[in-house]
Image (cartoon, rainbow, N blue to C red; front, side, top):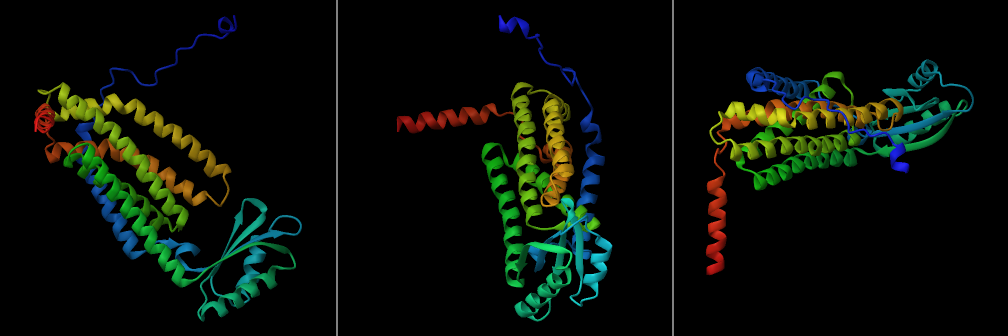
Length: 324
């Protein structure tokens, strides 16, 4: 009885089933654009450098809350610049009465850092309450930078090994180029706009690797399936068909992820803003790379057309071992 009261809704198709967009027609310009973007990103990271946060650069992070009313960033900046503790970054944090103060690493070691920290607290104690203090020394920040780099490199290598094991080396090479493109371009944008690069950004890069390879594997699975199904079809036509067949899933998954990330970016607060921004970039770039880099590269690398021989050899080898 209850089921009869619920209106029947079978869902809606956002993409026509016979969609045939000519992605392969743009593979040359897209690859050229990606190579240029990767080269520019490397140059930006080498020349401008990444704006490392306290995690990677060392220094102190102080969270303050006003005793009454909203924080006046201009007055606070003027006050802290006058106490002689070097470069001090101040920004609103969450609500209008919360402030985040970043104090650079002081020359003179731990004692100098603690002295500068005390100056900041003393200068703000009349109007602000200290809520949190984080101090990262130069040795720890250097170690964190190295482990962050190792984590991203190890993530890429592990994914390549997985794709290689599951498919063929051409798919693995396409995946590693696409993943490297995603990480490099994201880092280049962070360097260009000098957005803060900290541990949360590294966590976002690792998450991007997982998201991007998931997209790439879905497209690769369909390509392999179509290679077995359409043995006489021209390769570019087959790659185009495979991308179109998975396009609905790729775009809708990306849009769903973007909707969540945009909401978190707007309402999630300052603590996860860097993470969210890196993820937003990564989802867009990762979706692009799975369509315009990983798949077209298979055409250039000469992917194996007939997988039936391989399957037959595997079956024969299994039978031979069983008889032995």
